Structure formats: C-alpha cells, structure tokens
Image (tube, rainbow, N blue to C red):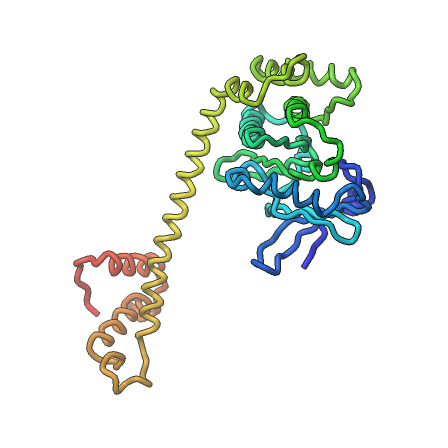
Amino acid sequence: NAYCLDSEQKASRRSSFGYPCRTFQVTSREDGNLYCLHRFDDVRSVSPKIAAAVLERWTQNASLQEHPGIVPLYRCFVAQRAVFFVHQYIPGARTLQECLSGPLSEVVLWSCVTHLVAAIRKVHSAHLAVRSINLSHILSTTDAAASRLRVRLNCVGILDALEFETRRHVADLQVADIRDLGWLILSLATGTEVTAKSDRTTFAQCENFLAQNFSIEMRNICMTLIKSSSAPSIVDLSRAISGRIYDELDTAYRSIDLTERLLSSEYESGRALRLLLKLGYVNERPEFGQDRRWASSGDCYVLTLFRDFVFHQADGAGYPVMDLGHVVAALNKLDAEDEEKIVL
C-alpha cells in the first residue's frame, strides 16, 4: 500500500535534489510497518551497484541507525529508471519549512541546535556527511512532555547516491555541513529562509535581527559557522555549546519522569482490568454446575457476592448507585489484599 505525502504544489516542481521526486507512505509486506519512500525519476547516474554501496555506508553502523536525531535509511534500490530510498516513517512529522511561521524563541532554538549538533557529530564520526541540512529536509515533531521541538536529520544518503560520481572528499562535505548548520540557525532565529545564495541585504537584515534579539553566545556561534575562513569541526562546536547541552539533558530527564508517571498510572489501571476479567470469567457459569470448581457455590459464590457489592450498590430508597469511586476503591483493596472486612 502506498499513500502520496506530497501536496499538489510540491509535486508539480522539481525537488531540491535536482530531480523529479515523489514521497510516499508505504506499508512493508515483510513486517507490516510504515516507511517513507522517496522516488526520484529519470536518474541515469545511479546503478544498482552504487545504490548498494551507499546503503552499506549508512547501514553498517548500528549506532548511526539507532540515533534518535537521525531518520535512518533502510533500503536503496533502482527500478523502472527510478531510484528509491526507504527511510523510517515519523508519524505527524513536518519539515521545518512547513512549520516555521516566525522566529523561534532562544530557548527553543538552543534545543534545536543541541539536537542537530548531536546528530551531525554522530554522522561525522562515522566518516560520512549529512548533505541535507536545510529547512526543507529536517523533520520536526512536538515533544508534548517537554514542550519542545524534536528535530531529526532526514534524507540522509540521497545525495551520496545521486552525486556518487562527483567523488567529493568527505572532509569537504563535512565542512559544508557546518556552513549549512550556520545558515539554518540564522533562518530559525529570524523566521526567514536564508542560504548562501541569499543577497547581501537580506543577510545583513537577518544578522541585525539576530544581534538585537538573541544572546551574544548565539550570535557568535551562528556567525562563526557562516563567516569564519576556517569552519570549526563538529567536535569544536560541541565543546562550545556544552553548557547548553546540560540544559537539554535536564529537559530530557523531566520528560522521562513524566512519561514514567503516566506509564505507572496506566499500569495501575491495567491491574484493575485484570481483576475485572477474572471476575467476569468465573461469575455465573451455570453450564458447568456439576464441576465444583465452577459451580455457583463455595468460593465462586463469594466472588459473585463481591461482584454485587462492587457494582450493584443501592441507596436507602432502593435506587441504584453508580459510584465510580466505590468501584475503584474496592478493586484496589482487593488487589492489595486489604484486611478490611465487608458484609456481602
């Protein structure tokens, strides 16, 4: 099964990779999971051998495939004069270009920067380059527990296959990643898409906006990535923002604590459900009346009376009482083996 994720306007123009591209949500016949499939038509420079080589680069490192800031590449193949790339499908994700409606606050921007730096550092440590650091290729989702944006590097490996024959050195591509990160930070800070191809007036206006509305630390890092004659390595950049990483770590721990509390509540609800299921299995099974284990006498009769005590309460006038608190309290006491005695 395949479902096109592109809007009509997006489908009518060429992708930023230079080839006609369509994006689909597909269901695997092997495992039944959802995946994101990119199809590039009229590509003659990619052979099955090139596709296999690119796929091996990105899949041989397990930690790279499992990194939370990278959308992993699962398959790359050639068929019907087209090249196909299969990535993980992220439900509800949108590109930064689609969800950017204005300048981000500095707190949210630092969060995005730390996520991206961590992901880029993992890619560069594997002697690879991202080559897709821009607003149209980075996915974002809202982390409701932490009230932050989650950003992920997407479309990894695509340019490696489409431009395989150019044979550019990895070190040069990694420097380009650092430059692209600087332009991306400037775009998020100003709410305006800015690239190396933007005119000087637009760049000067965005730089002034950054200086007036953000901290000196943010401005220095952004301008260093864009303007410096020798771009810093991703390791140097990680050291420069180390203080901000601790803030993000605190936020991650808060999110984990909240998730565990919610999970604990659901677990407790599950315990009550199991008690209800057991009572439902045992109560009122007249067809097994000859079997003492199922007959409506002895222990089973006590369980029937307890069921009536929990659900069939009545007030002084004989009207039925639907008290959810009474039901929950009674089941919790039963689950905890409370020593309280009740009259059935």
